[in-house]
Length: 155
Image (cartoon, rainbow, N blue to C red):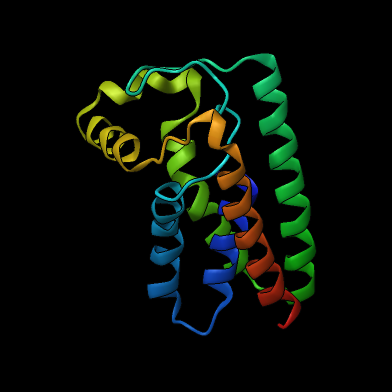
């Protein structure tokens, strides 16, 4: 899933009318729900094997960098409009699973007991979209971003 989608979904959940003791954990768990549906990501077209560590190419790193930059830009606009720190907490919690599990220079933590199980769960729940079906991933993310945009524009 694009980081932008995770960030904005977490922000939307946390900014809603639900008590933060419920909405913030929901923002965290939204990550897994979004990862379970067809989606595009930097590695959609990569030659990866499930369960193996993957080190991204320069092109994939650039893609992720631009995705993060765009997501943070939109998140900043939303934050300055609504001025709620919950938006930032929700966004952070929604990308936390990827920060824990998908940053190559700390793949070593996957060998530690809790992180090993976390990685197995994260990897298992993740929808591996075949490159030839990339359009389904683009469609689901477009719909998600449109829904989140409508939510924040109506706030």
